[in-house]
Image (tube, rainbow, N blue to C red):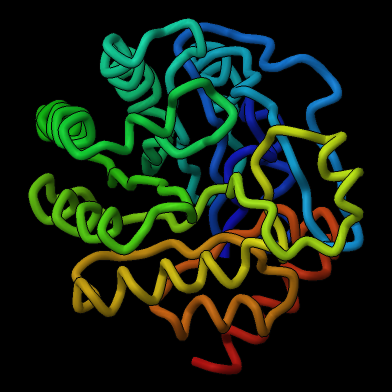
Length: 282
């Protein structure tokens, strides 16, 4: 069980977080150049739904800055590097940003996550289109093969993809031979929320996480797993607030799970509880 990206954006706390029982921690999303992200306030709790809405906008100090702390690694915990493009970088030039991050971080992380599914960077989700993903993932795989120690590469996808788009994702994994999928990122949907509609409208744009995305995330995991005949590993994330939620993801086809919003609402005791439940269920 791991900690999803977005919590330790700049690789500041992974040494301390490793003491809580996580098996792996994903840092980032990191970009080539530092950026301040979107204007504040940009993170909102909606406790009636046990959810968060964020529009952080990839605020981070840049990939090169994170290396300073990754070099001072005091834990054997698996560290993943979640990479994206700078907001100012056009989609036409996005591939260069991902390649820069990949080369910069390669010696300091254990696996990579290509983030093209965050709804808080303008037009970023358009990079989930098949032609770009084939070009990007193909290039990262090519570069990876030239490294002394190649690292696993995973793609993080949105929960808002339809089945036809998920079929394309399965085909992309088959063609590029990347190492897995993280399902899922936050959603732009506001369907079925208990929170007062006026409050939701006041918060406005942003990615919704937590319990409201649990069911859809599990549906995506199950679809990918069954339709591909478990052809690749899946990390399940989205709405895990209890040990039972984690098992639900695993039974749907996830090989590993990550938490974020559940960690915020339930506290660090959730980590031990989930680990215990997973062990009990083999």
